[in-house]
Image (cartoon, rainbow, N blue to C red; front, side):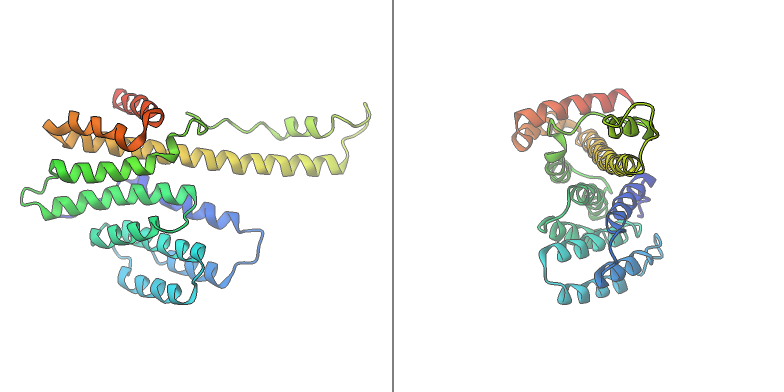
Length: 261
């Protein structure tokens, strides 16, 4: 049996990777940057040479020993094995768990939990004579989703990302102290452009985290549907993992997701 991942997971993970690349665009790429970019360029769905790329990543792990470098390499391995049609879901699970033990950035960590939920589903279905997930497998997948949701359910992450104002608004702020009637100074324009660039970067960060949260909520809803008679038991177990404040937001998001089906 093969599982075609929804296009959203590919878009989600690709967005995260390109965001990380964009964050480094003002600095000369390091040797590790170049190596990971070359590996990433060879991802090609079910035609991805996953084993070969894994060997390349393992070689990088022997050369780059800093925790953050290792995190980036393990994250790349998750990308490789989550987007090759999950031909070997156990490899995606293995590298997802290894990646989660590293100092990942928030977006990366959320994406790994999303990938892990798909890999666990495919692995459970292939391991079952009925090709279906049982309640225990659903619980395991749900627990990973809940762990991924904990930071994304923090009240500081809003329900929606606030749109970035146009450049004119930043120009008004930066030129407020200048003499009336004079043209806006070059310095004020530069400051306004810089401030808007920072605001756009923050908007994208918040937007991507919100999308990851929504994706994990939808995965939770999916696994609860598969749990059948165990659904109520699993819904009750979420509070123990999430805590009361996060669970309240989780329940609200879960209800909204079901209502939009």
